[in-house]
Length: 247
Ligand SMILES: NC(=O)c1ccc[n+]([C@@H]2O[C@H](COP(=O)([O-])OP(=O)(O)OC[C@H]3O[C@@H](n4cnc5c(N)ncnc54)[C@H](OP(=O)(O)O)[C@@H]3O)[C@@H](O)[C@H]2O)c1
Image (cartoon, rainbow, N blue to C red; front, top):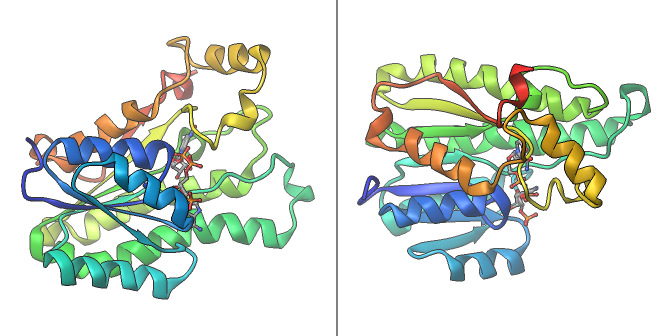
């Protein structure tokens, strides 16, 4: 039980990587709070995770985010682990075809959303010598032929640098801040790109290990960063991507 007695918050914990992560943290002793904007999916997810509660929150709304932290402190008295996971993927379009509203929407969720949760969580993580894990993407590390999701790439690249900025800013408080860059993982987000056998083969072949990833494979990396196994690790950027980004 690597996380006995810990209180963990996973944004976007109702589905995909966030859900798998919440489950793994809970199976390792943490009490887990998951957030999402869709209530029905949130309620369903909570039933499948031991020691979890769900608090609905749209990450684009700072009052919702403030309320999540307030409820956690009222209920549990502290916060130890923040997993900045919630995210959206835009329609594939070249830069000149994106309108400003589409651009802003992606940045609002994937970047400003992580700022909102982190800002509210920091004063409490200072008290627990806590840990932050940012879920970026290997699309934040390099450009990919035909990827054409510039707002997404920009948001994920920014989160990689913010990981290092926050790690340095809060090292005196003994808050560790680390980042995971997944390759293509089998979730609702990637379903539109995995419709046919040909799509699946293409995506599998994009990864040198010959397959796309499963959400649990990201969750296990989050567990590592959240636990004392990573007690001397901060500002680290870990690719968990079947080798996709080394090509
Ligand atoms: N899947 C991949 O291949 C992949 C690769 C690299 C990085 N990532 C990153 O990993 C993270 C999780 O991705 P995923 O594939 O698990 O995505 P997913 O299956 O689409 O799940 C996204 C989660 O984020 C939540 N969310 C989205 N918009 C929100 C908002 N405005 N307010 C609150 N919650 C919101 C969703 O909640 P609702 O159910 O309420 O919408 C859901 O819980 C994302 O940051 C993504 O960019 C994914």
